[in-house]
Image (cartoon, rainbow, N blue to C red; front, side, top):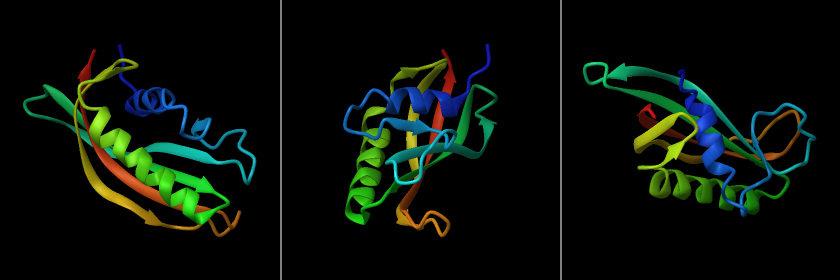
Length: 126
């Protein structure tokens, strides 16, 4: 069984009703819809091949800058505080570390406010 760590994070984040309903990728997204985009930026197998680390980036898109930053830091809190020890999808999450706290990176095409953060996800197959 293959573990898709991005899918596991998406499954986890979709359990929070206070986050945007559009969580995952940008397919079928309408500009202006509050969106939480989640994707992998790389990773590797570690500790004598007993677990994996995948770096996961999240981007919060919103028309209102204050709402975008608030949502990004809320996502950060959920990932760092609530995700360790959780089974989501096919992954058992051992730990989560922060790579980058949310930072401002507006979308030049849609002119939406975007805050991006990145975590290191440590997991094993469930």
